[in-house]
Length: 475
Image (cartoon, rainbow, N blue to C red; front, side, top):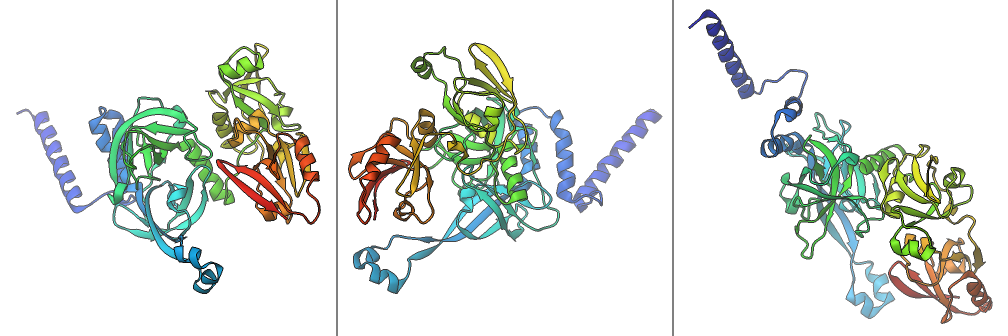
């Protein structure tokens, strides 16, 4: 054997022995915790791995330490048949029938300060929250804030050497890409499942108010809620939220909240304690062939502007009724809900670039996203005031916005404090269907019927609130 071959062999043997003793003794660079050293090694090695199986292993090792098991404890008022039977006296003597509750979910640690991102429904009504890491450590968590409209919440734990996961850009994902879902289904901690991105931009699912879901066929089951959906670069591109299932278990259709939306919500909760949603003052409709036919305009895919609120950012930027918005900051638009989500999650004070068509000509404007003032959405609309509330006519855009498509009535835009309307239980954005069994379809009819209610008398008001119809009594 030649001398250079002997030298190489000795170097190789020394390296192997050094690696053996270091790993066996748990020796890592002194300035790095063991898991962090491992994370850096795994991250550097991702680009060299073939897809999918070996890459799955490395991504799972990289992200799983940051995925936590969440136990939420609270109380719930339950129906008591004895209270119904014996009435108010029984309720007052025995007190409310409240039972303790415990629920479970998942979460992911996203920074060194110990902030944990999860679903709002995982910690709803919680009196205490325990977070358990994969290494066995447990922490009592502080709830920094929750946002039910997006089903997101932020917790905080205090500990040393906490593993973290990195955010990816959910705007760059593509249908067909491999993803991993990591969580604690049925209490089985740090379970990893694989699948692909089945669709993106899913709205009208009926899970949350602001929906722009990533759909995946990675197995998601009860207990996965709040865990990360991860791409093949080991980045969190979504927070798993729900499944579509007839049985309550996995059927190949799961939904995750995009990471970009989650990051914006988390930032607002940390800075302000609540989410400040962007607004530009648009009343919008999905542009469909039927709507184009009804309006007598050429069909073009996008979002139809039914109205720009006077003095709003949209009106100041030049948008007006009849415009069809086709892109928002370069994103192709397919629905009004999609555009509303994009605007809502754009930072307050930032500009958003809207591309629109007017009379066949393509234009562009850049409204500055603002925080809406109370009642700003209804500014400039024809209104009527009576019985302690202010109502407006139900336009097509308002009907779509509040789920009253195909209904007739007037929309409540304000309820006066301590008024008879408030005392009766009428709320903002309820739909008034009629008064004293007489139907109303516009503000003029509402005013006439309200005038018929004499001081000291009693009136019944038929109200639709979402999908619920109720009869309220005004005295």
